[in-house]
Amino acid sequence: MTAGADSDRQAEIAAKGSAFSADELQQITEDIVGALKTVYDPEIPCDIYELGLIYKVDIEDDRSVEIDMTLTAPGCPVAGEMPGWVADAVGAVAGVGPVNVTMVFDPPWTPERMSEEAKVALNWY
Image (tube, rainbow, N blue to C red):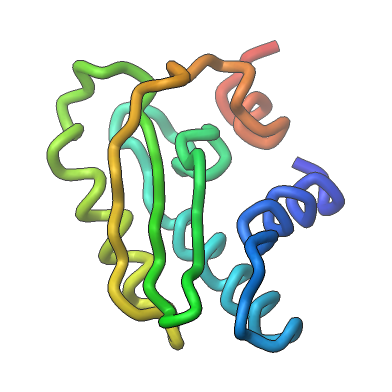
């Protein structure tokens, strides 16, 4: 993924109106994205952010974080565990309050959601 595309995705995360200063919101957004990039699907050697499994991240004024995510397939063996991994990773970010992760399957995940970085890592060309 190019730096510009990553910035665009981060801006989507932070786009919601906020009581944070612009600098603080940018920093917490970058830190959340960094935390999301530490979570990997154990069957795929790529992080969930680059795979496009994160559909929405809302940072609320009270510092709580609401995340909608999906899986590459509804029958994924770690379906019950992965939301906890995501909540733990994002919850460890400085300045973040409680984290709620909701598993969604609409729209279904498709490989088109993957970043260029993920496609290269997985040889999807």
